[in-house]
Image (cartoon, rainbow, N blue to C red; front, side):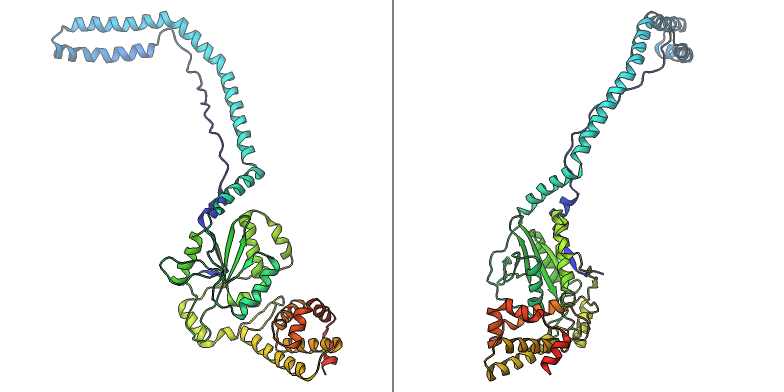
Length: 418
């Protein structure tokens, strides 16, 4: 079974990670050891030739009609000539053999030296620094072939989960997170739109970051699931264009956004071979895997409305409640804000109290532990988007609003809102 996060890296980029710099081939032949010491007469050879000639003479005589005694004389003469040749050439053969014996250690030493020199060249070429340099250059060549997006005017809408997660992505990867991008699909009227695109224009590194929900919220129809042809086709499309694809489940993004961002950073570090991007995640826990559901399980999840019941177990999660609960909380908060904005013109002190009070409302339905500092940022991000007096003031005075919330703590807040 597949598990979230799903990370799909194009083959060209994967091959870079195992590529090694070319090294010259070692062509020096291994010197052969000298043979056995030559003899004046090779008695073994003479005996073998005699043993072959004696039984062969009658057969050859019968085939050729030549007298056997004549063939015997010829064979004896040949064997004698062979023995005489060995005797007369023995001094030369011995001298050559002695020279080979004397020269062999020198040849062997030269071979070993050449082998060592070649080993040094290979070691230098395959040093971690040279390998990293080679792979980086090769990576740049591969990434230069990446096909970028062809538009930035997508009409696709973002849900609450995407909006919140986008804030975190933009915080960790400032200036490199993009939305509403489009990539045209051949022979199709509508383009693909990444939920988020991480783009490093200098490297031409493109990452499609997706949030997978098990079903469409309003209809209950399965949307992302194991073996989905639609998802596989889309993944292949992006990979073929040189894009990396990273898919998270909706539950992972809602419950553990920091850890999801850490996964993106780990993918980047793995690709470019630079782990410095992970420094900001030193205190962020690793993301736990989540099994990818099947189509049948997605139907069951829709029947049980699991998107309303995500259980975030970690105390590190930003917001331990689901998307719809967040919307309800903020509706309460907004009604409070609207009421107060209609009844009085706020001064600095009143604004501080109102921000405290509404922050309390924002946190009121949170049942598990949360990161208060991150919750403050999300609260202000949501508040400054509201077309109320207080929302407009926060938008124009964000730094002052942050100062107000810095002094917030549960005991003081309870007193001020009672």
